[in-house]
Length: 412
Image (cartoon, rainbow, N blue to C red; front, side, top):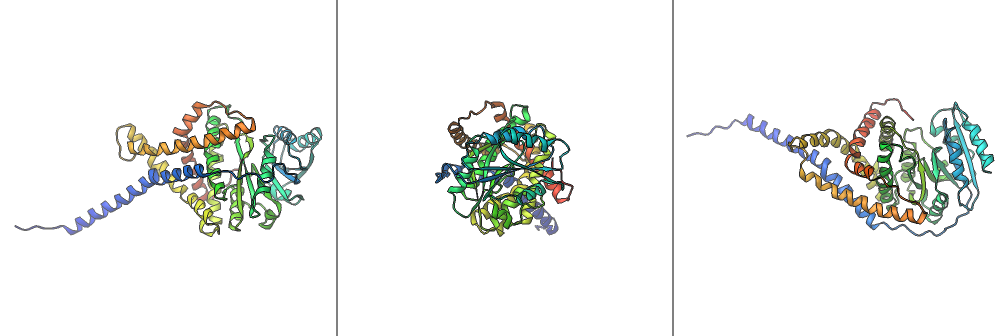
């Protein structure tokens, strides 16, 4: 009796098994292991987080607010009215930059400045692009601190005081403080209700976690405070679709720190339809790729920041797996085919819910201290937990593709 082995066939079978094993690990890690680890890391960080006390509660340092505008005639007056209501004790200088507007933005800003008795100047920038407008204003700033504010963003009356207090109470290495931006128009429709919870819980939890490690990765242009000299030292805002991301990473690369102040709240308008939401979030995804190209995670001198930016490095991988593996796997699971997604996948959900509940507790405490009330939006909350990532991941993948292909930038 003899036994014959077909060695070529065995080699093919081994290669087949190895390739399938690698693919399975790639998919499972992207669906469960890595997201589960990140959620657990954020949860533990939030539980450990304790905001340091303010050393200066009522700062008086003069500040300059820069508002870059393009066709904001209908919004600029209300934005300035909320600046006028601030309880900030120091002098507030306002520079409104009209960036190629075709409406009466400049006239409305001047009139509002007179009506609200504001120290306000209007300047013009003929080159389109928010970075051009901000850099033009930087030439006119004479104060130690500069605050950027979007023309559709309304400040809570204590917002500036808390923002400057955090800077004045921070170590000298801190060069920027990001404010907490929440959704103003959440009652418009279902799309805005979804985003309300993303800003209130998702984005806030990420920023609070990053702030714990003194490495907030985005001092967002919509509402943040910067040290003017440090802005000038790095040459101002870059020509980038995510100029606020790139400039923040430039600070971090210089061994400077960026904080987040959850008590300094502003409310902004968010996209009201999926088309505009897709444009915004794909732009954010492109901005992250820009930042990763310009400043590699391993180039950051701060250990914690290397780790945090390293998490950003795996986000494209997670979005790709979620879009092309998890979502088709969910459809198959609904048909009784548990080839990719099965009951065990649901174990990631409790971590995400615990993370949301911890942050929700913190946010309720902040709102109570500020005299604010959380709007009832239970349907939006449930939809956010169950479906929001199904919208965001494919949009992010589109943004990655756009950046890799070098497609034209769409700012609005």
